[in-house]
Figure 1 (cartoon, rainbow, N blue to C red):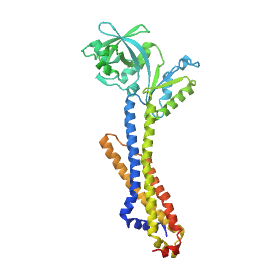
Figure 2 (figure 1 turned 135 degrees about the vertical axis):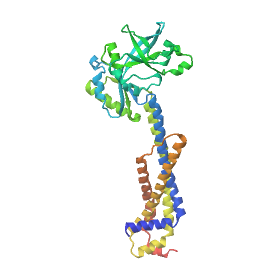
Figure 3 (figure 1 turned 60 degrees about the vertical axis):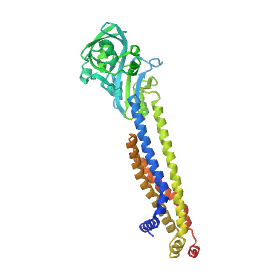
Figure 4 (figure 1 turned 45 degrees about the vertical axis):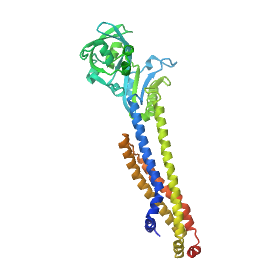
Length: 404
């Protein structure tokens, strides 16, 4: 008997008992649909959570030099050549060197407001995005031309200018270590990163913040090196790979073991690993029902062998070999499992989409999980169909023909 005839015979046997076949497939359907749905929902939930963390700095690392290391030399300070080396690193969404300087902002009464200024690049706006309450960010042309413009936080704007519109006005900034005061034109006002403290009446304890262009900061400070370099991964879950590549590049240029890094979100990567492990665990628990479905397939195939003993005897009597009988029953088991798998995949896709609409979590359907589901369905039919098929194949034809 060739494959096509065997396949047709298997379909006829299964369709002859539609309800029994459907109930047998139920375990496979539930198992496959559960695996697909739980995997899609789990990955979607993980992406949503890590996406929220990313806004707070997850996947963002601050690279700096350990100036206390025995091998440190001033020539190893981070500079523009380091930035050029790192710009083409794989999985890098944004990169920004910056300098940090403690300053005093002068209010209209010439009083000092303690704070800090960051000299940044346009990439910094991607990595540490600000919410502007007034005005705009520093323009690319203003970065390049070292225009003395600044963006300040809203708390500082209120302390200095009261209810007046600060845009276009000058603010004096005293660079303490340089003992130099520089006037900047305000082009934007952003929400203070600790704005929640203001609602508790703690604004007087909140430091002032401002951002100017990095080239301008270098000119004012008279330096050509950076405090740190911020890097942001395109895929936060792969940030450790990005970090490893960056440290390797820097060490190849200079010397090993002098570079330090710190994640902007404490324990963010560890939290992501917990989510990944939890997702795998939940998917594994859902897949246990596949074992139950496999046992159901074996059970129904044993019943089928018992019901068709006389048919097996007749087929053997007219020349069917053991391998023909074995192949026929194995085919029936595989077709049963694959049919259940196909229905399970469809239900899994539908269930994950419906849950996504209800919960607001966009499910992430994986091609690998779908392919694995098809493979598992086939494997279940093969593994749990072997025993019943062997029972049928090794049956004595004389005893089979005598069976009533």
